[in-house]
Image 1 (cartoon, rainbow, N blue to C red):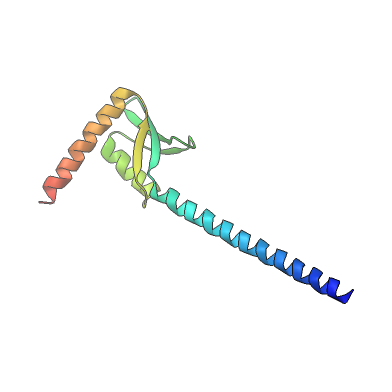
Image 2 (cartoon, rainbow, N blue to C red):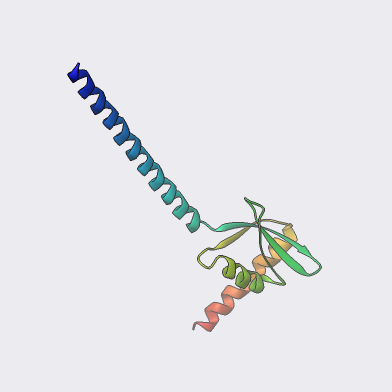
Length: 115
């Protein structure tokens, strides 16, 4: 009878240990996933109304920022997400094309300024 109780206690301790290890591994995996998500750019949907461009998170539909041009959008985005990048993934084709052109101009200006 005592042997059975000892084995039951050992089994209970083993189950508790495995539970703790599983929880710790799950928490570590969740932290790694959160770190990876922070490294990915925020996917933006853009829309223009009355000369103002509005950006929403394409995944969550949360409002992100607004501005009159890409430079303002970039500055306002950086205030909200200082350690993240953005990618415009949705929006009217003409507006997206316009913003891409502004991006090329900004990059060219930055490259010229650094020389």
